[in-house]
Length: 126
Image (cartoon, rainbow, N blue to C red; front, side, top):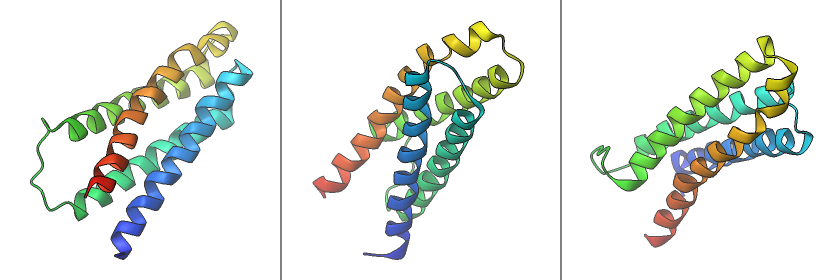
């Protein structure tokens, strides 16, 4: 297996690990903490890096209208909004916003899982 492929798999897997830890631990604690925000940022950074690495591997021309590309881009943008919002809430939010933040987070994670699982399916299909 080429090193670039291994790197892409590792980066996306790290994105899954960090983002999932952040989302699920924040959901179970029902209170946004600083370390959750750090996990969100790490997940996003690993996801961007993994996505870019996969783009370097891809032999296809970039087409935003392909379902996997479209859902992946949508997930990245929603994750970016999520992590910026989490940072804002953690730094300046009220107690109430810290406690209510988890309601939105799980939806972002579920959206992110669509291109993650779709990418696994497409890779196994080859």
